[in-house]
Length: 301
Image (cartoon, rainbow, N blue to C red):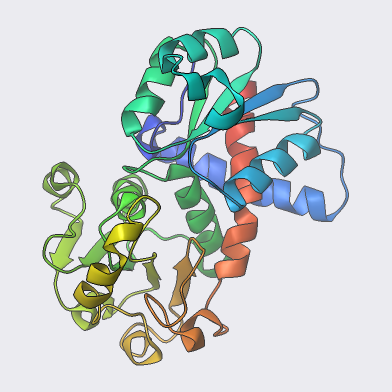
């Protein structure tokens, strides 16, 4: 059997993505009703963290526990990765001991190398290029609150980072329009823009980007590893805060999402993130359910 990996959203097709989103909502209901769902009993997940985390670690650990399985936390400080063991060798060893590997790291090449040398599914928990697990949760949140996102307009405001790149992939798979507003020099991957010209548009004016939008989303201006650029980015992104005034130009029922942690008063105002149309807490919870659906898809299909 061919091993399925989840390095980016493009490792699944449109139908499979919709299947995972729907299953996530089913698993969420089962958990709320107290139904036993130990579909990964006696299965184990190795979790490699080269970047720190709250939501990714807790959601994967809790998800494996609820599925009747277990998880193993690994960081460079307490594994041979910190002493220079090649990632390919780590993949060969771990995949003989566990049933899946999740990695949260800097370079996307780390995920690719793990997948190339692993005999079990490898999941991208975040890289500097993509954050596909977060998009599963974001899309689940939209579907649960507003229905199918096909044909809708989504607005990304701010840095063209790993989240923005993943939103481009989601637009392709789920057939929605994505309008990206970012300052010059902070664009997402040019290859992604070139490959999705039919549905992805790049503008410089956030107000223009949110007109007719059903979903407005953003992220911190300086991601992990970019802290030394913080002050410069505050200046460059000064006009890109998602404020109540900006949201007033979107559809009246437009929701706001943020992968968290958020910096109130920078990329988003306190009024917006605490507004009833902000679904960031549902979005954060859905990391748990979406990743459980992903684990089940990869290990039980």
